[in-house]
Image (tube, rainbow, N blue to C red):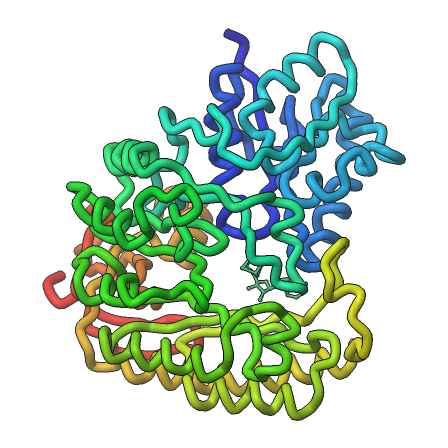
Length: 465
Ligand code: 5AD
Ligand code: SF4
């Protein structure tokens, strides 16, 4: 079969990273292999995101740049998929004659057919059909392309929560969970290919299986915990309103479950939380955090916060700062509120000015920076078990320029990077002797004594080099 090259540009969240990997698996049977070069690609796929305005701008600007590439290569096929494609549909084709396919979030399984059709008939296609339940072929489990040390796996799609700021229910559709059998089969295939850690993905994994009256999320975790050869399990994202005692106890009971939870709070003000339709109060959130810390004292808690939600007053923002001071998250993603198409908050009055939003973001980030560093500093002197991802970024860059210098590398120290159970990045050196090739530590669990805390990572030394 003729081999062809595919370039995939992934914008946005981990779910999109997983989807891009699935796109590749679906297109391999058509003879497509991935490339990093836009110029030599026969097919370019832009997997878009529309969660915030910035992501949308990024996607449109990338798609715009492709016009020139198509001019040089008229047989090139360009497909735009993901959340923005779902939202904008055929509007993406208008004024962009270089785009051939627009495919929505439920259309990945139908992409090979669309590509064949475009190749044969030279027609343009838009497929943004959505379905209530998971469709056959939507999550083909047979041939995972991605067998990195750490892999993502989508266990459910869509969301039924309708937070008033959020576009996800509109572009990813109704919540639907995959059958545990399929999930386990896929994880086993990943482990056979070298994966040692899986992150189970869903917009709200806490409500996994509830609608289908299948297994609950804690039950699924217990099944995944039994998989031989798998070292670690993570999951994201959790909605605080659905964080059950059973799930909290999993942090005590399951040896492979990493001691980290991402638990987006979004705001510390009850009034804002109510208008966001989050269905919990500040008190309930604080109680859940206390519970988690009692069950698993070493657990790391990270969160998302939106600043400048319509009508957010100075007092509301103060309440958010107080909450952050009280909880001291291990890490925080803070976002400036932006209106999204069709969401109800877009129609709310009392919009906060752009300047005010930027100021609030900066104040929040400065506050959190202090706590992130404090949390990292608390690790100094401790021994942490690190799952090694691979060579550190610095080392990879160093190797590529030193290869140019004709392998004159002094291999005395090799710098590796991995993560602790609490999801902190750790860099460490492997003393490997002069000019010896380093043994591959990727995928291994190594005990590292932490010597230094930096703003976003830790530095240490292996206990048994
Ligand atoms: N504006 C700003 N941030 C948003 N998020 C979701 N929608 C918006 C929006 N309209 C943030 C939330 C969510 C994270 C993935 O993105 O904090 O948890
Ligand atoms: Fe969006 Fe809320 Fe659903 Fe999360 S739970 S995806 S914020 S609607």
